[in-house]
Each structure stands twice: as C-alpha cells, then as structure tokens.
Image (cartoon, rainbow, N blue to C red):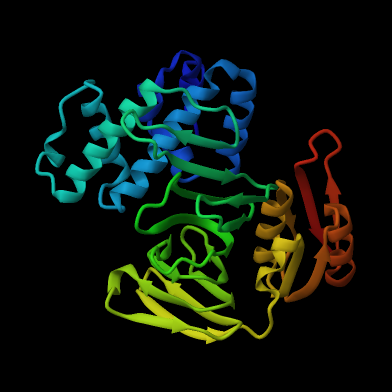
Length: 350
C-alpha cells in the first residue's frame, strides 16, 4: 500500500527519485490491482511525467533482466542510489560478486541512455544507446489487453494480457527473448541464430516452430508445442535438455523445486486465447476469477462460496456480462457490475 504523504510528492519526482523509490520499484516488479489502478490514474493526471515514469520503469525492468535475480530489490535500490550519487553503498553490499558488478555496470549504462534520450509515450517503450544502433525494447500488456508483435527477425509474438516481453531491436548471434506472463511464438527459421525464450528459470529453444509459453510469476511454467520442434532446459540444471517434437507436447517446470516434467496436452485448446477464445477446463473458481480479471481488466469480489467449482466452458469473443451469465446458470450465483465503476464486479453464490 502506498504512503499517502509520498503520493503527494510524486509530481516533483525526477528520474532518479522514481528509480530509488521502493514503492515505485515494487509496482514495476510486483504489480497488483491497487498499484496498477493508482499509477494508471496518476499518469492520466500528470501527463508531463509520463516519459520520466516510462524511462524509470524500463530501466528497472532491464536491470531485473540483466541482474539474473542475483541482487535483491533492497540492494538494487542501494546500488541505484550509489550510482546516482545519493549515498555511498551500504556495508552489506560492499563485497560485490560478478553478477552485482555486471548489474552496476548495466545500471550506469542504462541511466546514461535514459538521461540522454527521450522515450515514446506509448504502451511499448524503447531505449536508444548512445554509441549503438541496437535498442532494448520492452513491450507490456496490462489487464484487458492483447497484442501482436513482430520481432526484428520477422518472428511473431502474440502477447496475452497482464504479460510482457523484452528483446533487442537487432539480433546478433542469438535471438533472445525474456517473457513474463503468457505469449504464443511463431518463429522464423534461421539455423545460424537460435531462438531462446527465458521464462521464470526455463529456457525454451527453437529454430523454426510455433509454441505457447505460460509463465506468470510465482507459478509453474507451461510450454506447449504447436508445430516444429523445441528443447526446454531449466537454468538451474543446464545440462539436462528435453526435446519436444510432437504436436501438443507439453513441458511443465516448477522453479520452487527445479522439477521439469514432459507430457502432452489432451487437446490443442491451450493456445486458443490467441484467437480471442476464453477456455476453462474443469477450472476451480480461483482460476476463473483470475482469468476474468486479466481478460476484462476488472476487480471481482466473491461472497458465500462454500463449495468446490469445476467448470468447463468456451467463450469466443463474448462480453463479460455474457460470460458471467453462462457460468452463473451452471454454478448458481448472481452477479452485479457497478454502474459507476464498471471494473468492480460482485459475485454472490446462492
């Protein structure tokens, strides 16, 4: 939750203030409905700060990718403060390993980039290095958004809601993508440049193929093959490579215990979201609630749920009200959509 007094000062913030503010970094790295709503409204009310906020956000996301999770959020803040000259590094991080040194170097470089160039005020932001034509690109969808992205090599990414991808504007040697959330990839063949997707500790490799990856933070990573051939490797066990070459082949990776399981989907419904079809398969209500919140950008409150739900259904491009009516008929609940705030939805079980 944000500090009420601090909110009043955000309009006075410069780039370095946003970078070193723990609440701002927490929104960038660990967004939730409350923080998303606050910053969406704040940016709308402070349009002159939009470019500064986007620059700070992209730097933090870039540092997170480059740090390989070796530096925790607190130490990232301290390093940024040190880099910006706000204070000397705290004693707890004086002894820096290679990852931390690389992190600090990346921070310096990215700060120079951000201070030297402006940022385009859009849902997709770019950083232009001072001495290079290669830009570092982050594209993000909030709840209720989906997009189609063409990569520099001509490959296509269908990015689902509440998801983001990061990549270089030019691929030299390896085509490397960082994914947080869910995306479907149609990869152009190029045997000289392997295509790698990094997602929560799992690396998926392809030369020319199409596949879906679902990798939301804190949850298991799911990879599903549609065409071609892929390999999957857990970063923690980079010597173990699993090959998937059957349509519908499935890999599930649990970062908590490092377990990688290979199986197959029962059907090919796992990527129907790319055709804007919402699918539930024996889904519990927690899964239904989360999917609807992400799909329609709403906040759902549930009352009187005291029994298990296992719902199956398919909804091709239907409105939220239509979806709720169909589920309510089977699962016996009523619902209300707030007339003054259409993002607020209440579900009451009978």
